[in-house]
Length: 493
Image (cartoon, rainbow, N blue to C red; front, side, top):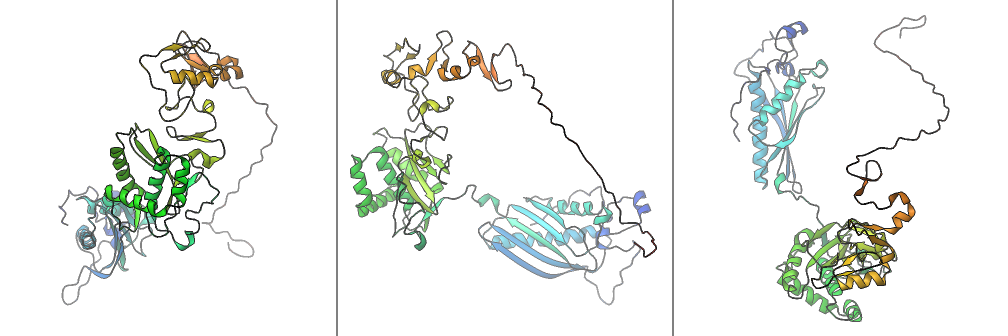
């Protein structure tokens, strides 16, 4: 890689290569790279014997290749033999040689480097000179040279590269080709996990256990069996139980058919959910379109965790397919809420568990405020030729099923609708705190923690002072220095 000569820096790198007196540095430009290469005065003359002496020489070079992270680390050791009139060119040539060599090594290993970082270290430098990993630009070398300028700004950091070998480490990475998301890979079971496939006890009835002892298709077993269970493809649940426990060959035939029709290779050593779940979902949504099913897959990880590890499918889905992932193995899920205990349910919209629908958060998109039900297909759809008012709670219904359920579940006694503004409020909230009684135009304010109209503005209640507990503070301070000597009777300290 070639680099064009940039503009001359307003800080001369010569200053870093030559340590001048403090008085001279105040009168002249302080930032010289000669300070790093030589700690002698600027009048030093390098004696050259017979022949032309090399300004610098390469002593050693080591390459480290990490295939997983697309990384090449090239460590090169140099020695500077003499100081030239233009030391900037000396450092620039060393860096240019290292960078070009690192990029060439990357290409030999199939890496198109797009990011680069550098570190320069020496026993004579108090602090290593380093450049963080960043995009490769034409001014990469100049950015590294600017770090030399920073070294000369502090006397404590001032060192020399002349007299001892120094090391240049170049890191090149192909970040654009790295995976942006963590993999969820299922593969063939190991000997330690063959007895209990995913480390889950058999008493966990909420799982559809997958036992793929002779292949690595557990992801597709979990998807296919859960799909059959959810949509009732086999009819009565007893039929699914026999299919799950006894008809193992039939299961495998269905799995192979699914993989072939979804254009999924059969010879992979492992299968990533990020790669192959979208193919299965797209295939199902085309196949079952006439049946009215729209699928969306939810991959759950840690047990009793609300948030799924991965979700794929359209937003207008009506058939969720939940599967469970643990220890490189997939299982199907009968009921997501059952993993949290008895009588628990799960909402796919807000991805939270709940016991009763009336206790679910009122802002959920899958909650019907009229009948109180939560789940897929909620709020209840509007039927054009139906409109009915409930005289007990004041709500207007556009769906007969919604109306009948709100009557049978006594939802009338749990919430009411204001006949003036149409706001639905919960009776339970007002019974707990009469101050929360519904008033048209009043909304809950998170700033002043109360209901009020937007026209009134916020009023923050004053804090009630707490009763102070008497206490006593005892403070002390020790000061000491170590730079001065004191002569005592016994010895000097």
